[in-house]
View 1 (cartoon, rainbow, N blue to C red):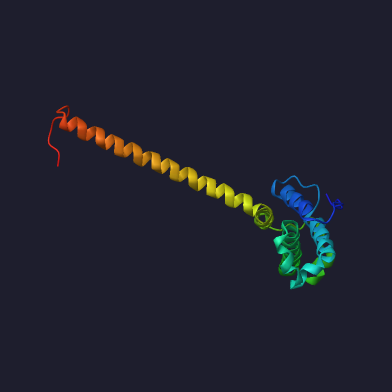
View 2 (cartoon, one colour; view 1 turned 90 degrees about the vertical axis):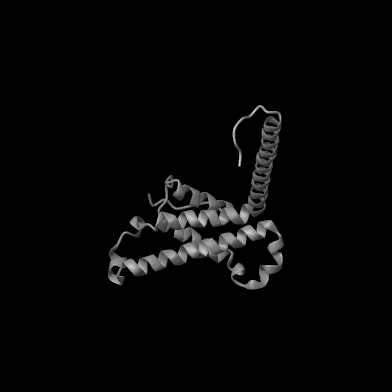
Length: 165
């Protein structure tokens, strides 16, 4: 491991890198990803200011802003993790290429990026799912009404015997 990441600094690359870690197929260390994210943050530091808010209607900018926030958070979590688990002397002596953040963090960041990218698709998929549920429920109710009507007809026709309360 210890390969330097040479991908372009954009949301698509970050999504790819996170996916590789989540699937445990990464050929780079967590430290490599953190350094890449630090450079990503420097490139898009303009998103640190709130002047981009007007541009959030543009889906591409929205993705880049979310990617910026995720990349920034990756760096922060890395440095917090190092500070919590190592003394200053250990940091100097340690091979940071072996340090790993919890997988759950990467899964959360990956999901966050995908939600920012696909929020309209997610909404549409949930809407379609809801429509299917309502259609199925409607069919069940229709079947129930038909079955109830058929049972009453059978009772009235004398086909069903016994006491009913």
